[in-house]
Image (cartoon, rainbow over all chains, first blue to last red; front, side, top):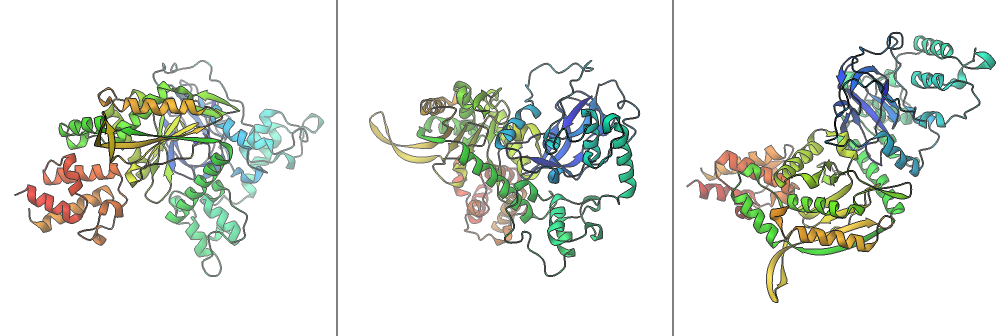
Length: 492
Length: 81
């Protein structure tokens, strides 16, 4: 039985809220299928499955916030119906938000480390897994939740610990009836059953509503929820709060972690953008603190590229026209293939090259903030395909849903602020990537061409790179390749 | 196409691309692309919608004339006569 865990959808994500299951127990699932919708501070994301088999148990209920790595569901072999009887009959209690159990956030290294193992990058083109794998590897239970306890104090075998974890039972509150006072599986099951009858049903509420309720002293059970399935939302809590409408964040409070302030996707826009701001703040602060950036810049003659582009567009239906951005992105992707030292991740004090060029594209959102979804294998896409993929991903970033692989797979990010009118941009690297490419606006400038002065369209291409991973010579090579590629647009 | 129809078509096309845009607040000579923070993809979509609705093929070279409501309307009127 394989575990489907809360994925790390980017270096800035410690936890996520499961919004919706897209499959039911018993449904067949295939590697790459979207199976759940997860909300992070930045966006709502469809998360794909990395196993082929049958969805057995759903361990976490919609509306629950859990740390990265927490098992969300169990996936059984293809042929099997719904796991073994007995275990599957008993519905799992929804997991409690695990914030309280974590005495402190994971260290930077843990965050970075955590990203890789839980999100194996799917290699496209790789033969798909056999439909009925005889053995599905069971990932080792993620140690995050148990790490907070002092191991050794409570005697219990790992299986029992895991069960307690899943049932939301604190082992330290149990009296072990096993040999030597060991806590047995029966002890945990009895405690879970007792708690289920003793406790009132958990109120459905968004994470922000829960936090606000705690801050404002509002009893959630007394609040009428107006959210989906009567979930209590932040606005409901504010209305229920005594006194004039209380501020969302009391002054003097300790800075809230980005994840703790996460509102629901259905929450008010200002809450959502505040959470987005904090997520960006956290990640960019870390990037500037940890990454010794170096910056390079060059001016690229765009005459050939623009001529080619206008010619192409003259002969194309409006819907198939290309933008300069498509050419710039393609050149950036091909150059990354040429200079693989800039295409990948810096983790555990060493560089790991990306498997394929997955170009992150910085997309500014209308309500503020930005996301950088990946165009997978951008170096292998023909320009019309790349343009279609770009339109699709930008539209979904702004209005709909991105896929988990899109928000976490990027191996190199490009920011194209030319649209906003600036000529040069020196960006901040998105960890754990090691470089960020910037393109400004294509502008007409006087240029020396073949000994004569002419007016040519030019673009300023920049590179912010991680000096731990590369030196300036590598960065210079990259920008030179970008400039050269743009001189032969027909080969892009 | 008269000028009023043309202006309506331009406003509707903008609304299609940016549904929450307050097109009523746009003056005829406002640079709507800047005011609505339309990026090049938004603008391309706008050109696509406008071209589709008016039946006029709009070239890259025409787009510098399409920066204001008045400019767009003039362009449409000129090309349907």
